Image 1 (tube, rainbow, N blue to C red):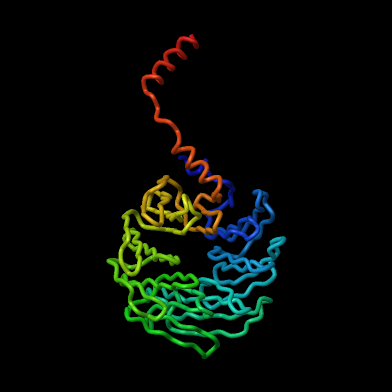
Image 2: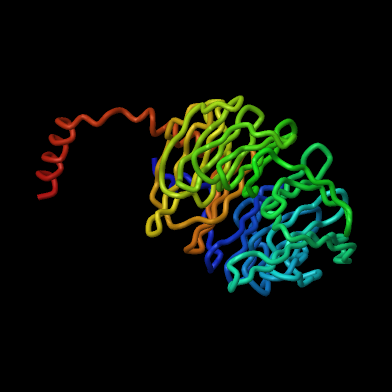
Length: 356
């Protein structure tokens, strides 16, 4: 099946896509390397365009607001018309955002080229109107931010590693992990939480090591039944109860997400990049069975919900797939009868005679 022909919507941002977000009412938002942000409605109509000061890395819709990171800034955009409501510069790059307990949390980090390391990081707490409430500064960089069981947790790099619940300028609770290695990724559901480490370890909410894999963990996805870890060497490993259920190898993964179901099984969408060639692979999350493998431009942004999946590409293309249409196309492709070569050759001869 042609993956692109089965997409529900294809649009262009006009620059390389670096952030994408599905809206709750069926629309989609995309942000780019040069700060462009666009909003499309459910039927694909361009709703508005906004210009931010730098590369957009995170888009988060909350009520009538869209919060975004743009270079050194955290910004708030009016979700209805795209106007800029407020902007606040941070100390260093604005890395990620989270909305929790009636406030906006932002993470920043200062990178020193001479030392080839992060010198200082901070967690910023804002009111939704842009008022800065407090800043918690630390030596460790928070590589991941997760909400779980009524807490907002920050997975940390060296020197402390482990993860912390930061609640004020000087207040935090730290949990050390058995793996003495920086946390590089994380994911949570209502019942599960997993952190991935630079040494290949997978930790749970208590800090205990669930499993140790053979390379650094770049991406990790928690579901109610399993943990999907993607390694620095390109391998994807699915763990159930701490044991490998299945694994696949490939080029390095740039994006990954659990998508909608096919035949009552969730799909795993993976964007890979070799350095010169890209591809999107779709597997069954339950069995690892490959459903599709399509060459593409490089993709660096992905978002999914129960019915749709959106991917942004380096050439500026924004594509959205919808479950019903995608599954219908897949079933039609499977049901196509095998081609009868002899019958086809005879039809070609008759067509040639007719066209003389």
